[in-house]
Image 1 (cartoon, protein in one colour):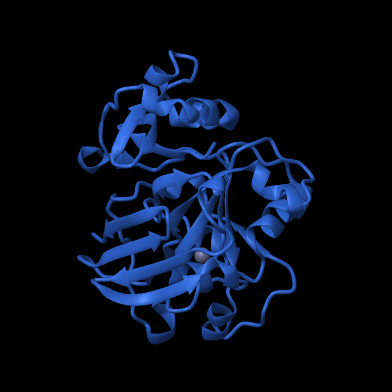
Image 2 (cartoon, rainbow, N blue to C red):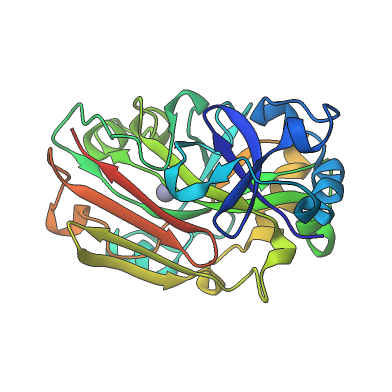
Length: 278
Ligand code: ZN
């Protein structure tokens, strides 16, 4: 049974249309209210989701304050140069194996939170973000989607000077300033989509469309990435994978983010995040 999950006022909720349902209430206290704890059992989420319409909703999504669907992931991975056209605009060779870096979990922010620029070299990167849903070790690519709770939208905001100023470059710090990881607005289970490997991803800055791609053009697709990572380390529910950004980032033309910029990020079937730079 597909489900759509949200973090509303730091409580785990399921979403149906414009209605949301408090998971702890509709599960009769069998699922915890904390989003991280609720995400640890996706079978329970699916079960509650299948009988959701037997309940009265707790409110309307349009009035709700949405937080990051996974507010405190244990691990948060980024993937560098995972779209051909972005590798080209970055003047880098195509990777032969995934380029993985740590986007430290402390940078995770909500879908409508401000991005606090701390430098003049901040750049946007719209991405599909994958949320692990099971303890996952050595999964083969064919089975990988079974281990994913869902997908959401993300911004891999990057401080290019911090990222590329060191020799060799240090992605970890450059991608991890406080608030540089907006995610959301909803976490949507893979079986909700006709083809979860082919979703449109767009990014606008002040209404100007800078990025527009489909996730079917990822060099290393989601099943490959989950399988690849799970061979190195055990993945746990809530671990995030920022799967990489397509072309159109600000760096090639030095169009860096400035205070007041409005970043609008959309993933088809997931929704739209709006983050304002301060
Ligand atoms: Zn990225």
